[in-house]
Length: 85
Image (cartoon, rainbow, N blue to C red; front, side, top):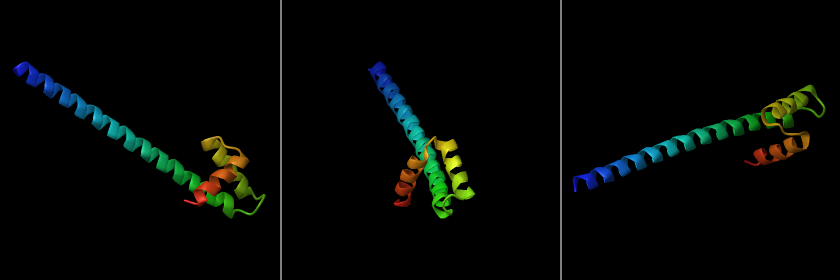
């Protein structure tokens, strides 16, 4: 009977440990996603706020391409999406 109790405790502790790790991983992933979204919002603000063809617009596009690997058309799509948030 004592062996059975120890086995149940072991399963409980393993379950608690695995759940704790999963919660920590999800929290880190959410933080990374939020920081990326904030970076995209700020790039979109610069991109949309700059006059057409200006150096600021070009720099915002270069920074977006460097950090996300997106093209000009995709930048417009991102900015429309993030502007509606």
